[in-house]
Image 1 (cartoon, helix red, strand yellow):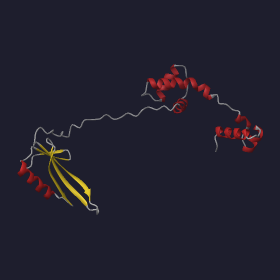
Image 2: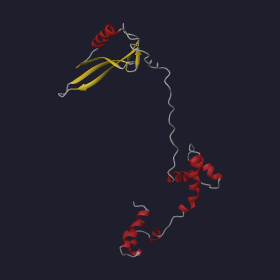
Image 3: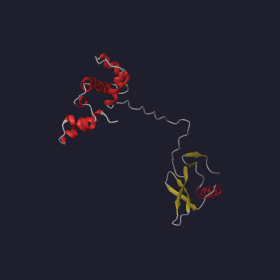
Image 4: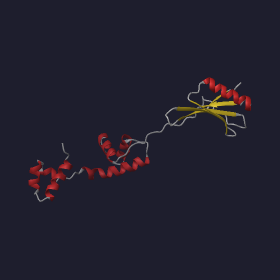
Length: 190
């Protein structure tokens, strides 16, 4: 099904090629009365559409239903369906409400490091060799001095090896006050 606007364009195309309007309408099976038709809706809706745009700018949280009430107060009486058609034609929409960012109060905040040996952080970093073998690296840093205390590289690092590396660091540097892994603070290592 072709819209009336497209049918009018097709007739205008044939007229530009030298066909008469009567002949072009007969070839395309288009009623001649629809070719010369101009909609009065556009002229009728122009004033209401400009008022709708100004009201939507004034009240950005209002939708077409509430804007329709304001339009009726200004003298543009219309149905809800017509108000919705004009709203869509103007490309208006109510902006989505963004959710408030809430501060997580249940989770403890990470303790900032105040001196050397106060907070240590450890994490795992993954890499791959040229032959495709995966490497797992355990990195331990002092958060205050940003010094890398240890980097342990192996194909797989289990919990026993993590404990071994941390106990070796504790015997060399002394125990930290806090030990952080993935932004979670735990008590000091014994």
